[in-house]
Length: 256
Image (cartoon, rainbow, N blue to C red; front, side):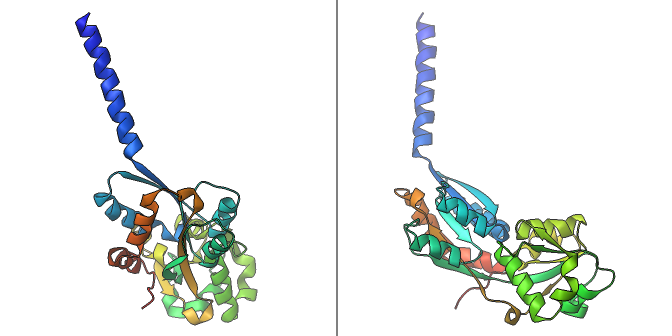
């Protein structure tokens, strides 16, 4: 009988310890633009080494889609957008509990396994052997909008618009190229510098920033994070030199 009681007490004790551990663990739910995946994953990896009691989950996708979801009550704690205007609008509409902060400036590139775009630059899109050109959907993805702006600027858009295929976001646009579903595409520099793209053996050309509106990217702490101190702690880490160096490594320019 004593052994039975001992076993029961042990189970109750273990359950109590597990419950206390889970209760003590902070959870951060982040919505982030898909171009940020590799940089943010790296930042979280470094942050977690000294903040082991914080569980961070990230959903990557289109900034405009996240804006709509958050406006309709999606339970995210922080929002990292490829276009700083989206978090600013959330702040203006009282969905945020912090000021919007810029974390970097995005850049766009032409990327292909089929041809080296550095040779002909934007004119490489006009080559007869290019049948499909991948970009993010310009109707809701900031990188797609900038891709279209650059093609208009260089007078190639009207000539190749029938060859365009649209990804839901810039990450999907990159997947179209790497999978062979598209011959070439305009994607984020941060994705071109990511390990999985580097290992594909492709080529990229950085499109001059004068050809599209500046892609200032920003983040904000959302109302859902009210009372969650780790949201503020993590947002401060994003603005640290360590995080800025990681962002710079993945091609996000930093304001001086």
